[in-house]
Amino acid sequence: MMMDAAGWDALRLSLLVGVTATLLGVPLATWIAWLLARGQFRGKGLLNALVHLPLVLPPVVTGYLLLLTFGRTGPVGQFLENTFGLVLAFRWTGAALAALVMAFPLMVRAIRLAIEAVDPKLEAAARTLGAPSWAVFRTVTLPLILPGILAGAVMGFAKAIGEFGATITFVANIPGQTQTLPSAIYALLQVPGGEGAAATLVLWACVLALGAVALSEWLARRVAARIAGQP
Amino acid sequence: MVGAAGCGADCGPAVSLRVALRHAFDGFGLDVAFTAGPGVTALFGRSGAGKTTVVNAVAGLLRPDHADIALGQTLFDSGTTHLPPNKRRIGYVFQDARLFPHLSVAENLDYAARFGARAKNRDQIVALLGLGDLLGRRPATLSGGQKQRVALGRALLSAPQLLLMDEPLAALDAPRKAEILPYLERLKAESAVPILYVSHALDEVARLADRIVVLDGGRIRADGPVFDVLADPELVPLFGVREAGAILPATVTERAADGLTRLTTSAGDVHLMGVHAAQGDTIRLRVLAQDVMLSRTRPDGLSALNILPVRISHIYKGDGPGVALRLMAGDDPLLARITARALAYLDLSEGDECFAILKASSVAPTAISGAQTAPV
Image (cartoon, rainbow over all chains, first blue to last red; front, side, top):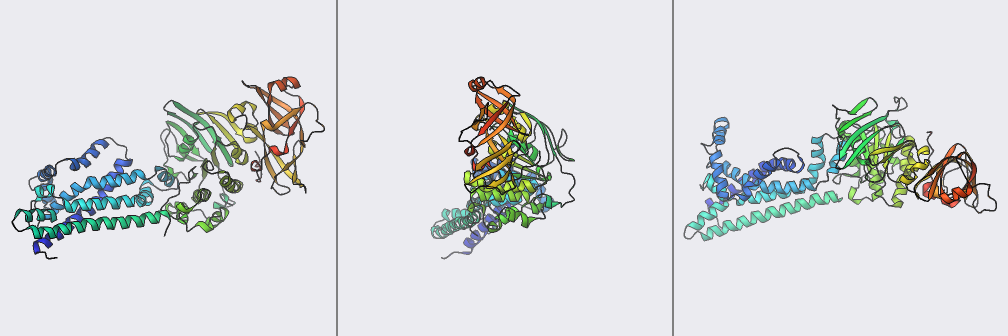
């Protein structure tokens, strides 16, 4: 399969963005999912709505809000640049943030469902056996929700490598800098004769998505078999 | 030795559990106070009586509106204190075994050890409960009875100062129940820690309990030695006329060739079939109130072999056609239920001497305990 340097850059960048968004997103999503599933606090409904906002807002709006907040003149963007020297706007890091924000509700939903499926009675039993609450989570809840976390990670990863609207609004479409697979495909389709190169990238996008699903299926089956009693 | 081996012969004086709590639900109020010393204290009541709420409060899994709960010198709950469940040093055996499905049997058993609660006699407990062959298995591959044995072992291996059992047999069928009960009896005989045993099954209570606290609608109806409370005629409506019955301690004195066993009670000998206990053992006979007949004179020419002289100590006339009587058979109370018409015909009143006729077959084998009766 023939692909030019720009194509390889887009593929590499998509993987980098997808992996970064997933690795940062999963622990955070697990924590938020646990709060939503087991926590009892004021503002739970608000937190739930906030998490799900990117799912229902037009992606362009999400991207614009990110630009307002995390852009170089935005409050958080200024703070990050002055304190850590971290610039998000028009960088691959910004693409990762946009992907993370867009993928986050999907991860939280999958993990929250898994946590709600864990019988709280098991956690109560662990408490009576001397486990403090953090240890209950680590030794009982976490191993039991592992399939859900994997599912959330794969959904999030697939969403992250495919994210287009918020990404292009927040970090534009700079080849080698912020041009991920979808934006590269979009750019190729805008010029005459770009269909061939675009088709190659489309194929890669399919391979990545299917590969991620297959990997998660295999991992989930292994975890399920371990719980069911086969070593 | 199970509980006692954890601290050896120089264990301090056995601790007692002190419970006083009030808690309001939707349209239901719980208000109880009792003490559970060494041995088995049964918390008896019909479903919805508030038993599980009490046990969960003792475990710290539920914080009642008002609670004063202490185990020996350790304050669990007061107006200002709420000790978290993981710091209470309790072993809790649930109705559903609640084994961790992602861990092997051995890992389940050693779970408490991860947090520093380690019984010194792991091998003995594993042997006592017959868990040796199960250690490598996953909970999903175990039968209901095996699961409950593992759950019992897991609770014991946390070196608890108090054992809570919430209907540990209720989810099991009769054969599985019969599989677990002997383990519970051995545990009771060898454990030094108080056991709070929640049940709505009188046959389990009759086999295991030393004391019984009877809960009814969130209040305590009776609290005392199990031999006295089960022979209380005023509790017959609550226990149910078919279930009510006293416990008669009896010592096996002779095993005859025809399959009958002679047992000696404080009121005389009885002959029963299906007794598995060895000669010299003291066992508990559960004599159902509806299986006791009364006669003014010693009956003759009757097929029933078990006739004990008794004295009527209390007559309770309920709302129905039946009358419940507490009888003293030697030093031990019996419970009988006859019709009000029969009572009038026999012209019996409190203090009268008469004869109680027990049919040998009226005592089912499962109702006969092989364990020593504890001094009450």
